[in-house]
Image 1 (cartoon, rainbow, N blue to C red):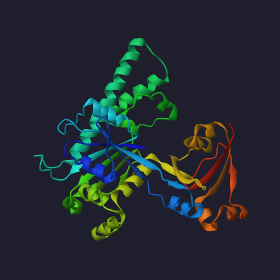
Image 2: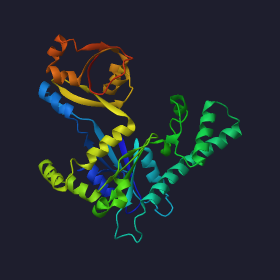
Image 3: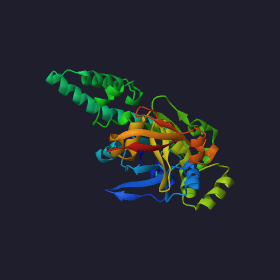
Image 4: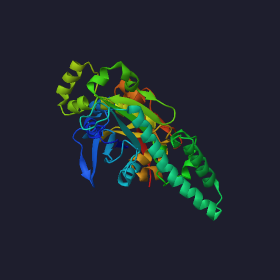
Length: 345
């Protein structure tokens, strides 16, 4: 999963990047990248049972898409827009603190609205050009109808993620990289004072809409400091602040929920690993996450649940208890399934 951090000048985007992706910052063409492992206690427990050569956690790649946007007009330069298009999820970092480099006080609601309007206008310009070309060509087909619906929806000031589009509808939009269709996390970057201020209570709450959007808050300066500490020191610092876990863990959970991701697991002496997939993925497609050959030559999925393994303690005990099963290619994989795929190519 590639998460693109966006924000206007002075929003503290780079500080948030340091908090979410500690040790990141590998620069490729002026864009900073950082990978973090998704905490998953199930992999740790599987490691205790199978004693594998390695444990592999799911990963999130954070992308600092670059700056240069204008907080007065909401406009982003073309290179930043292109970097946004390379992300699976957009994160709009919104300033919620006084910045000595800026004259204006923070206006989080204004910045949020400007950002949403800007990406909607970018999409609208693309789809309107497409619409005009097809009118000239007298082009007909389902893609024309979908394109027209999208234009109308954007003209009403609504992002495309809130438009009811079927899988077939979305296929007609493949390759266009529409930004308002991307899942969006609005991340309020608050000061320590704002974090304690009741006026910002609505910003601190984790809210999830039914249209592919989440909002939550972070105190970027504190979280960046926490991220730079050793694990033991992090625990002590969090306890002193009365916090249960780093904000990046809460962020990861929100991102997974937004994308409707789950993880199936593989376990053995070579490795124990978490494989993130979309909820509702069938077994044959899940096999393709490991290797295309396994998907192509899929025969059966030997499956049991992580919870059953924890209850019985070993695979042999699971088999004796009748808790293992063989599933076909149309089986819908569940979160926490431990799977060994049988295949032949």
